[in-house]
Image (cartoon, rainbow, N blue to C red; front, side, top):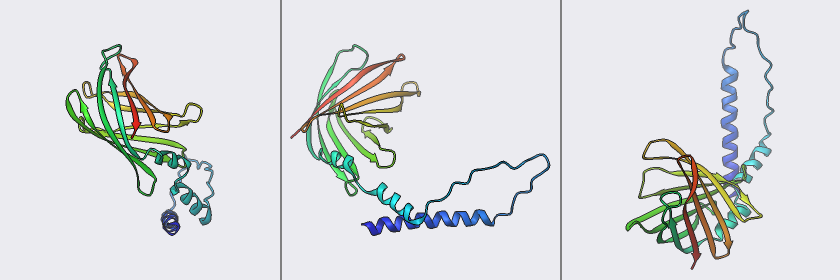
Length: 213
């Protein structure tokens, strides 16, 4: 597997070198009397060994990925929805199947259940970027044609991740911020809370309690 990382890193280095050669072969621009050259700081490139090491570190699953892998399995989901602030709660149930994919680098979740009596199916992915130290979550389902994307960092004290993203409101076509808090309650319990914005005010629109079988 390391040979793959080395090949990937070397390919990146070669492409960068070719780009530099192309730039060097271009004819120099002619400066007029009214244009003065500005001093530009030249960033020193990393040597090949350092670039290879950086790519290997980027591609190698770490502790965060082990934490994600602990959720592999089947989960029962008790879902509560609120259509508006202080609205009447609606209860639904679903099941979730979680697994790791692409060499334990990403987590994939498949949800199946019902919402308002209609069949519901959704797919979520979770990634941890070794470079930015940030989680990214995506979600798609059969009740829309858009993708929800949000980013957040793990709070070790509360064992929770606060994700923040933006969705397109299908009613008015405007971008609307949303927030999600994902909490590791205990080894077999997770809590997902969703917060939407209505009339300029945030309110809790969804809560899912996941219990592992």
